[in-house]
Image 1 (cartoon, rainbow, N blue to C red):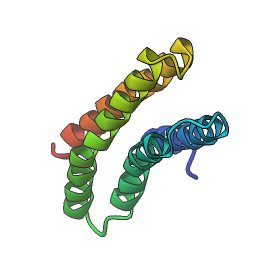
Image 2: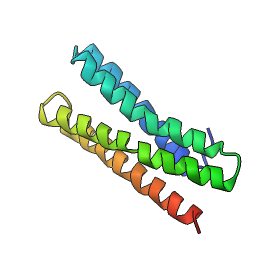
Image 3: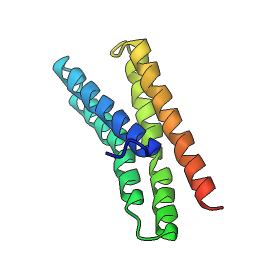
Image 4: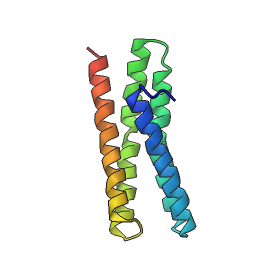
Length: 119
């Protein structure tokens, strides 16, 4: 993992947090489908960003980042699942809010990278 690449590092760390949350929720016998949806959506953005970093050219990089941004809808979906868990009392408010803030931060960073790469 490149520590100097902020979006890679933040998306990787976010994915780790989601995996740990998934394991915690499963240990508490929370509905499997709900946990699986959270796991899928919460880890997909990092995988898409990783693929974009491996782009063969600047144009390819931008194209793949744009795909990653469109796929960031998964991050919005993750935000939904986290809000649902929070409001239902299945997830501590402080933890849910922290993860939701991370979702927002990833979207902002990704958008900024795409915009600056097009210049």
